[in-house]
Length: 580
Image 1 (cartoon, rainbow, N blue to C red):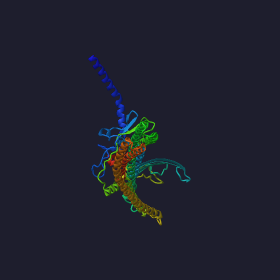
Image 2: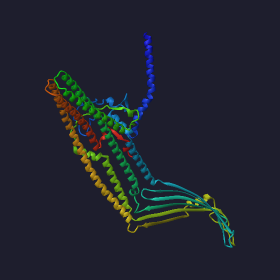
Image 3: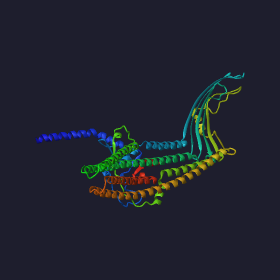
């Protein structure tokens, strides 16, 4: 018998091992898909979302969870991957929400493409200074009758093959050069051609150097500087988009937590009303209360059940909002699940925030503000460029060439002894003659031009300066807006701390008052109407306390947003912040 049991146990172990091997690839694939955002984001080791760190200090204040709320995520639950699906429930911690938002959100993906496009614009502008190789090959054949009676032969036949290879480039100081080699082969039926066929070789270099307009690196690289600034602006916009979306995701997560916890409060309120209804029925049956009391209790039960129905709708609305941010299709398997948040809202007020430090941090880190500053740099670059364009065109031009000629020498004579050209030889001999520098040519000079009035360039310069002045006003206005937002965020955070403290006292007093009223009701010194009123008061105070704690958490989220510390708080590094 013992051997049989061992055999059965061994078979079960083998079956379990086979099942694990079957489902292991699917599990690994699911986990790898959740980490797909690492190409854009890096969540540094030790990511924590316990909401216990703030900009100033770590003094522990009055802390605690809401009674009846889900417990805070433990270290294990905080490191769980998204998509923890149990039956008809999708469990999500705040960490899961952050990771999934970074991975799946469409708006973030769209903004990332803008940065990629700007990187290509930089390359496009840098390509202005890439050297260019050009080549040319041509062939020509002409047959022309000659009207002269002395022509011999009377029909001229010529053929020509031309080939040319060159290199040209524009340099960052505005210098433009061209170097080329050209070879020509000419053939003719003329009796007077000393070389037939004749090979002409030429090496030439041409230089153009602006001396006023378009001179200097800053002018010629202005488009590159602007493209780099546009990349930085797109990166700031990308960072700002991520902060906004993560802030929205966190807020919706806490809205869902509130709606679920508030549903529990309302369900408890319904249960209290039903318990009271049973007590009233018992007392009516023994004749200590009028039947009217039952109607009042039943009416209150119905009213509170309506509140439960509305609370359930709010949960569904918040679930849809969260799924939308996470880009979870509503008709998918996960989209049909009910979301169960794993994190509970925390109330842990920190040391008093240094307002001046917070404002300074916001002006130092806010991506929208840094974007404006970078735009100002771009405008100043445009002013410098337009100022240069008001100068006259004064270009130094020069060229230098080497010439060589060779061919099949033929005797040519007209009534006397025939003569033979001294430049006969092979094609290579012509190259040697050109490179010997015995047959060179050069040119040098300056080219000047200036439009009378120069109104086009002057108007563009004036417009560029006006753009700078306008942008400076925009930056000043944004600075004031940022300061106001930080002040309001700090004030709201301080207000919510006081709200939580007051709401806790009010909820505790409502509990004590209800308990006292129930004792009076038991001895006939109170009515069901009064008890129901105190029950309603307790439910309202419980909801207010819950809302105050949720608002406290959302105020901290907003505070981190206005000082641009959201990514640092979650230890997220954007790959887009790297230099091109």
